[in-house]
Image (cartoon, rainbow, N blue to C red; front, side, top):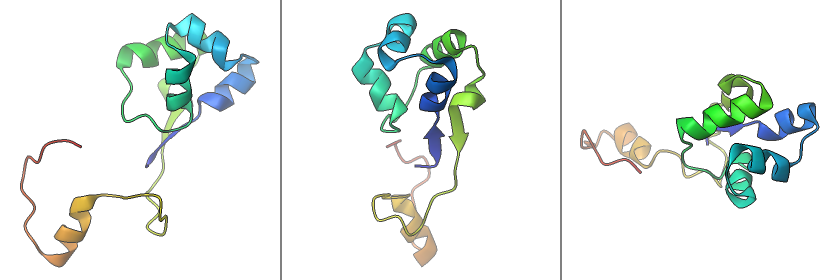
Length: 97
């Protein structure tokens, strides 16, 4: 996924545990682990704001963009990418995934 999550870096800098952060932010440790490990598909702005408040940081300290790795077999990438490359038409306004 092109968005990398660096919550673990900020936890280490703040010498804070996942459990303590989860308690202070108001989310479950399991949901925080999903976000921390990069498995989340979305994050609410209210959650991001709470993380930033508790960790005393900016959103850019927690999230960064990385280009896709075309050789990564675990990354399904953009399913429409192959269709566009082949010249096939891709419907505009396709529902989000």
